[in-house]
Image (cartoon, rainbow, N blue to C red; front, side):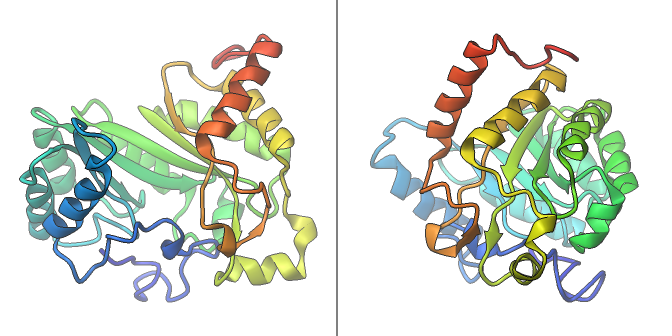
Length: 277
């Protein structure tokens, strides 16, 4: 799909940090059908994972930003691909309709279904600075509309956005607890080539928290201790192509390597998710 923050509905400039090519797999091109993209992705991974089943992840841009009819057609196309057993749909909290919610609720009766909202921050001042195009209230409303449905809800949160202090970032745990997502994905801010944020970073880098691996682990641990233990944390870090990253330089650290370091440090500190919840 497209994005209302790029086509002029909200803005032509997009979110300042966003470079979709940093997380789009090589087999995902918009000139290919959904079936072709999924089939090529499954072929790629099935060489290593012989019996694995798959979730169709509608990731790049805003995947509810289309007509309700087209939205239903694309989800059904994905579910009709052999090996696909469920759906994950990434979108904005200000871009979901009641009809789409009802469709997701119906499909979730027979498949794994999750809707992921990019909330990024729980502070309006930050959302405005990164040209997100929605406010915190939109996030509250989106999760309220999806509450008590059969599908899962996910939230994406970025640590290190310009102007946010460590205390600001830790306070996001209280907000996440209040909107009650099923799942949460955390990201350290990566300043990427080809973004408006890269230009801002070069001019006023003092407004950015440049995490080392250890300082980020420390922040994540404190955040997790405040987080409702019923929320499933699916991811802790971003992984963008090394050649695109301006800051921070973690030497190509993989997510599984980070998780191993995090677990060891949590054991050392006798820490666990929800310790101070």
